[in-house]
Length: 208
Ligand code: SAH
Ligand code: MG
Image (cartoon, rainbow, N blue to C red):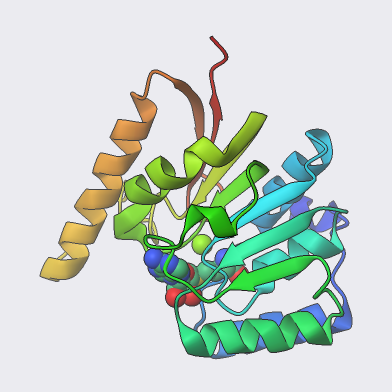
């Protein structure tokens, strides 16, 4: 691999590589290497201790963040098959003390089940609901905590000038574009967008 990013030394255990292969084989959407590097960089620089993730899938991103830091992770997954697979994978990696998975819909989960505050919130679930996730979980940010949101360019379609025929896809892409604009204009947050991976943003609440 002739890429500058091949110089990054992210830790991948053997089990994690098996999980990654399985995800790729079965078309489970997992975080890109670039976004994962960005997440780990942020966790280290901000000395993040507690992470909340919306959208576990089969645990690949939470296991990766756990292996590469000392943070504890709460993660929410509504799909039961994914949840069960995540639990199995996390156990296989012996990380069940540090990663807690909630088999819940993030839109309806009782916030009291979660910690009061998180240093990092990673939003990576249903892309049509990003604003709802943002509004529901941003009050859980600790002082100077950050929110990172994945897939803001959705397979390159949001800013790709590619004609989309499928109606549902078209509506999803429009929703993501609207969310991005809303986020960029949100006065109480400072937000930076990056075209790494599938497009991502990092946001921090302004301190009055
Ligand atoms: N973060 C994972 C990938 C998550 S894929 C990784 O990088 O490894 C998105 C996941 O979000 C899917 O498993 C989907 O079932 C879940 N999801 C979508 N909407 C959700 C919701 N409202 N509440 C909880 N989970 C949701
Ligand atoms: Mg993603």
